[in-house]
Amino acid sequence: MAKDIRNGDVLPLEIMARREEWNRGISVYMRQITVGMGVQIPKPVEWVIVEQENCYVEPMLRLGIQEAQKLMDELWQCGLRPTEGTGSAGSLAATERHLKDMQSVAMGLLRKQGVQV
Image (cartoon, rainbow, N blue to C red; front, side, top):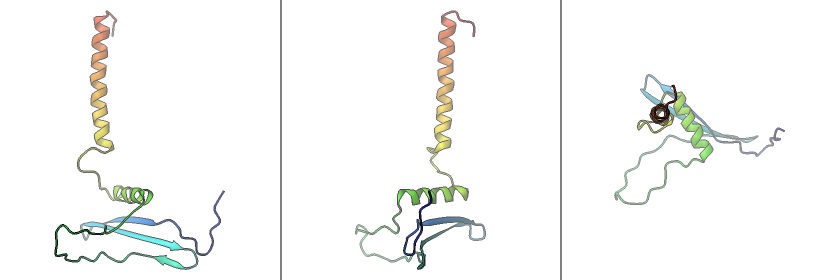
């Protein structure tokens, strides 16, 4: 059942990332639509100098889990991958090595029991 959308409803934050070949980087876009009222978009980040290195600083951006996941998915579509290898590919490789080791152990035990393998 589709939700009825009415004037004043704030729709979920939309995030888009695009690889910019000429700029050798990634451009990130965001918007949030309020039905019947328009679209909110963030301004570019403004850098400021602070005098103290250890002072409290508000985060540049706060995202909910769903929005952060959307950003991650968008960056993945741009070709970015985790650098440390603990993501899906790193976990899969470790699992494959473990499975190969367990197969060797099982075969050795079966041979010891006199089972033809």
